[in-house]
Amino acid sequence: MGKVYPEIEPRLRAFIEAQPVFFVATAPTSVDGHVNVSPKGMRGTLVVLGPHRVAYLDYHGSGAETIAHLRDNGRVTLMFCAFSGPPKILRLYGRGHTVPVDDPGFAARLADFPDPPDRHTVRAVIAVEVDRVADSCGFAVPVMEYQHDRDMLITHHGRKTTEELVAYRASRNAASIDGLPVF
Image 1 (cartoon, rainbow, N blue to C red):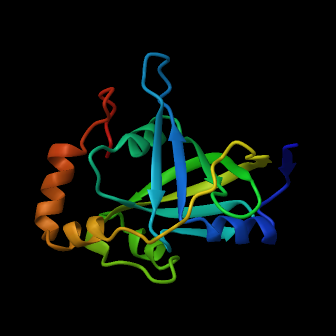
Image 2 (image 1 turned 135 degrees about the vertical axis):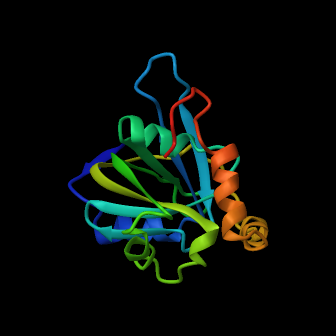
């Protein structure tokens, strides 16, 4: 039932942009390292930049596995599931890189988002060059009702100063659970 597409075509772009949640999977090069899957949400935090490019906002969190893994080898998969409407799973495979908040190019990457947040609340922009676009049926994915985004993350980060978030990254987001450096 699955199909491989040559690019993110308009119909797939519409599907991606309609999803309130997506998942990011990465793994370190080491076979002993932990595979990581992170749910991402909040509308407007992912943009399709072209037929082979997407980017998403990476907020401060309890870990920084994705950033460490991208620094290690760049491999990433984004997965979108239809929790309403016709069943569908879409995966974007590719190479990602991180544009951290203190990078000179960060402002330009943040400008790719239609309604960008205050720059100090974001840890980085993750940009992905997509080399494979594939779907599958999604017949076993449950039908669920989207209610609303949670605002706790934005509210929490908004109360922190830039200096506090820099300190947070240094103390809590400096290395992956496998000891890989983040920045």
